[in-house]
Length: 523
Image 1 (cartoon, rainbow, N blue to C red):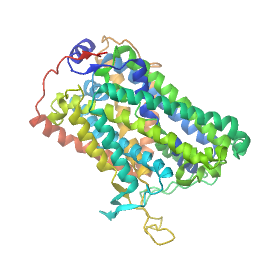
Image 2: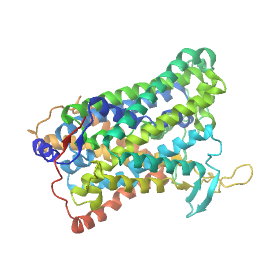
Image 3: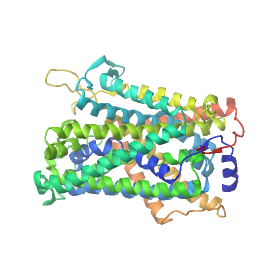
Image 4: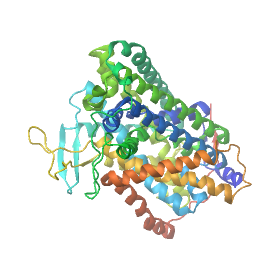
């Protein structure tokens, strides 16, 4: 099977221009966006102590690395453009591959692109105050009890970033690779600088020392209010069950911040020696980023008190930490670092996503135009279609209501709308966890169905580590479905809508046949 798949991949028409370093940069660069600089505020409000905050990130790291090591086996077996789409297709049936690609297009990839673009605009607003989530170009238009559409200056900047990076990536892999390498290097160094300043300087200047005196007692936590009226609110301060629920809900932010590591599998048709370099880049990239993420939270905790972390203005924890260290200049320095980070992150996401739509179209399961390459050997129409939908996902907002069911308003009586960034986290994380679990179950299926297939790399810790991932991720999904129903249920619904769409495409779609032969990178 692996030989046949590799043989087919040698005729894809892509240029094999990604080496091990480039592949690792895509893994790390797609993971590091704005989340690590923001979501610790929300996590700390949910779990309420330094120990639990760090443990949330450590568990996220263990889950991410465990999944990446499992994917390494599948990537080495099936080094083909489309990555996870191919793994699901081969493990189950083409329907399951299609459901992943459909959900990737509708919410996973495009929703992440939209969320990161909003993060870019949020921090650009630090330097340009007119870029604001409430500086309306089109005021919110309520379209239902729970949702509204709007266009603020912040949303407009997010959309423009998506369009700009899409145009750049239609100009060929080499340009996209150069942008990715430069910006990933820059933001990795920025994150290292933040860690060093926080641990060695912030610890002397800040108020974080008390965080380590009582690391495990939750304080000043926000209750987890479920969307089902028959389910009681819980809190991390109300015993083991409440802490478990809060811990699972807190994984939304940290898992989102660590997501997109699998994007390198989408570009397998452009990776040199993919059987070796994709597993290595998955291990190296996820290991590097998770280490930096845990250390970044140590830096926050040594610099800021738990109250300062929980109530950082606009959840900008990293900015608050640098302001303690650098004074008023800290906000501007951090904003520049995160602008660089989110720019590079979205470049990697945009570059990789279109390769899945390409693979689907070659199977006759997506728009025919997305299965063709332009004269620069990239799927330009897939990039454009992805751009349009991601831009549209920037527009929706959730309407906020109190526990009494009445609309929430500010001091001036103005209706409050949900933070777009947090909304997109919930949509994306629930959907992506479904397919991570299914893909790793596929690892067990393929070991049974194809025991003699060449496996240049075998999943570390099989079967225990993959099984533990499946159990943990499933538990998180169940908690999110119960306590974050409003934003988790739509993700599941989107997956299910793919079933009738699949049979329509299967009936009327036309496979494009064998693609043209791939080419080595030209110097």
